[in-house]
Image 1 (cartoon, rainbow, N blue to C red):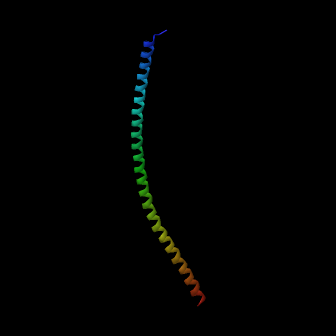
Image 2: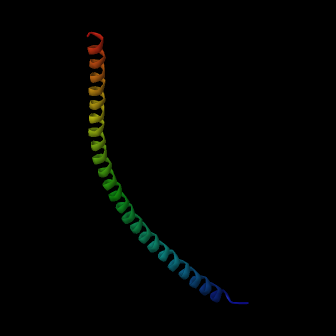
Image 3: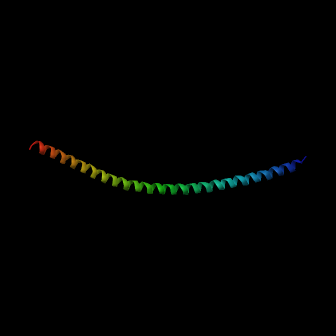
Length: 89
């Protein structure tokens, strides 16, 4: 059976190993956090670019919708004018 000093020395060695593992885990988690922040910044930049594209597309759709409604109103007025012209003739 090992003596008390040998057992304490063994436990001190194990504790030292555990502390090194904890320090390595802390460093790895810091690197992971840094990498995640960098990736989230890249994702935010992509979303900003997509938002810009959607805004420009939205402006284009609004313009085309205005033209479409204008053409429909002009066609409706032309049909109403033709019907009224034929009726009062």
